[in-house]
Image 1 (cartoon, helix red, strand yellow):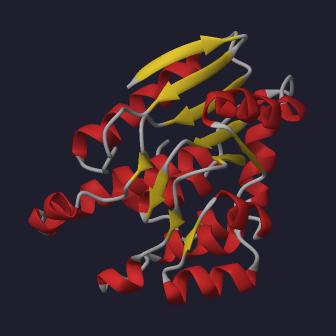
Image 2 (cartoon, one colour; image 1 turned 30 degrees about the vertical axis):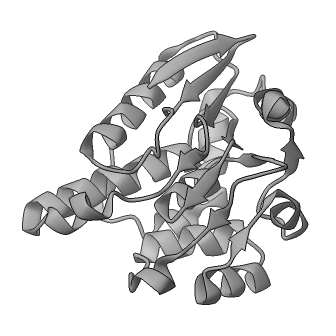
Length: 222
């Protein structure tokens, strides 16, 4: 993953492919969070994909190949990345340039704010059609971030939301043309910038305590 710095905002480019969650993607995401968090000049974090995809969720072939401790460790690293974003010491905004499916949609929900491309791309929780169950942490995150009627529709129908409907449903906070998307995301972060990092983390932990209570021990850092 590449990090582009724009006026103190660390723009993390997830990649130009489908950005599916497997070991290397999760490790690179953690590494990118380390870099931005370590920068004393950083004011905000924005994540964005490339082309048609923000993140298509889990690499299903990879996920189903894991067993026992390997599966536990991978899921711990994955949920740990979501929890790190949920409690990040800087404002975070997901710039949804394209499809955000499954855990890719949950990655977006772990940010403080979301901006979505107005003319293409879907936000979708397809687990019901894949025969997959949400972990307690994942479901708590979804319930924490979305209005209850949208939760029930998204979870029980697997509906795909385009930019207009995602904005109307409270899934995202803004829509923009793709060329303006990162700028729109940076604007969403602006009211939260310039705050103390320690107090920001403390408030985020308090705000999302019910989500973090469901984080498995293997996913906890420090």
